[in-house]
Length: 459
Image (tube, rainbow, N blue to C red):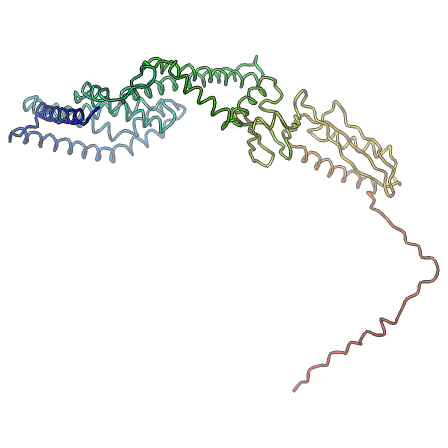
């Protein structure tokens, strides 16, 4: 595009805008300017009336809405309308003013008022419809784009705008002409199809997670595969719909592959590791694992990491690659039974048979200890000051913690031993002296004697 083309395009735009102003009644004549001013004043008055109605009626309607109980869908619909009450009142006021204007004067003298009413109504309808998009930013972006298109159509500027956006651009390899219109179409088509793909992916993921015939790993794996396939299909279909030859993307795809090979190795490794973990079912949501110093329950298996919530409430995001290459202790891999050991010792004066029976009884009395396998207690050592024992018992809920169970049973064992009169010994040492003990008093005699404190003199 040359400078002459740009000048010609600018001149055409100026002429078109002047013709459009003449068409809607804004002319250089005194009558046209007078009626245009009247319509602008009516629009401002309608907006002021909408503000007054919004401040007066909306609080009362909100108070009535709060009285609705047990109908969340109806309440949500009412809230959507209440949050747009100002624009709804504005559109209603404009339509009432337009009807009055057309009753008292010619239709041509209310053209601007009709445009304003259509624009306000279009904004109300579009803002309500776009509420189906959960992301607030994307919803606002979609509403702004849709209203812009609707406004251009209401103002009879849409065909000329499309021609303008398609009038300049540049050629790409493969015979593709890149223009602003093509970019807008591609973004719009990709956005709509990707949104539909994500919505279908969430629906499929919900159905998979609700299925009782699939284990947790298969549920997550199928959900992620469906989402990935839908996203890729949506992007390729959108590019094909706007007229872009997919073979022209070969060079771009090669560049992406090169970037993945050098700069995104860890990202791709974690992504592939995530699919491997889901496929081999080594870990799954709900398992209790230990990785290094991290102990907790798997909350989620994401594409790049696994979310592990520890007993203290911290949430660790462990890369999937670490779960593949590092040693992982899965406390509930093939069975949710976990054995815990307690070491303790008692005095030689106690009967070992009674101590063993007492320890097993204490362990069996805890609510989290399993009856089968039953607790056992063994003598492990005849030590210097005590007979040492090892108490073993099983639990099925390691996700609820293991230290708390051990602490409870230690305390219960202490109480039981005290009640039975069994002593928990501590090391004793006997020191024997051979021959007389000599004490040197030379150092003591050298120490200066402390002088007694003198009492203060009293007057």
